[in-house]
Amino acid sequence: MQDAQLVALKRGLEGSVVSSKLYGTLVAGRPVAAAAAKNSEIALVVAEHDFGIRIQADNPAAPAAPTDAVLRIPKADSEALDRRGRHAFERRHYRPEATSTYENGLAAAVQESRAG
Image (tube, rainbow, N blue to C red; front, side, top):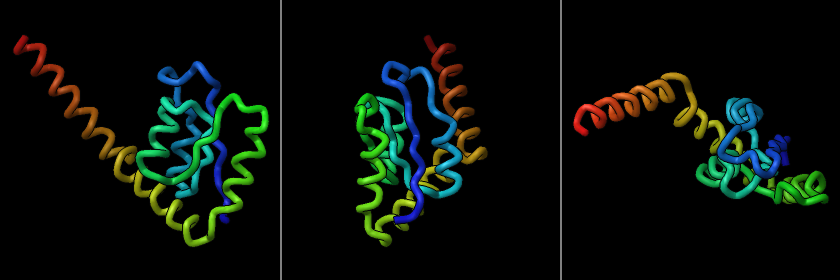
């Protein structure tokens, strides 16, 4: 298995913050071992684009768990995880795409406020 990035988020912070490590890892096209709650942005993005694994954030054995799980991933699967991570970045977080999504959302909100 190639390198994977551990991206952790303390339980209770989901919905409030996202680790910037996630975006750097996406840019690098590396798999993510997400130590985060199931409903966190980190876990949701990893699951949606299937480029890593999620482990229980408050598990005392958590630092060893992603290492063990990541080491068991065959190299061909690891390379596919790399590609999916980079694709997720390009599709969702690349500046022109993110700006367009933000602009469309803002325009929809303005239109909705004028109609209502």
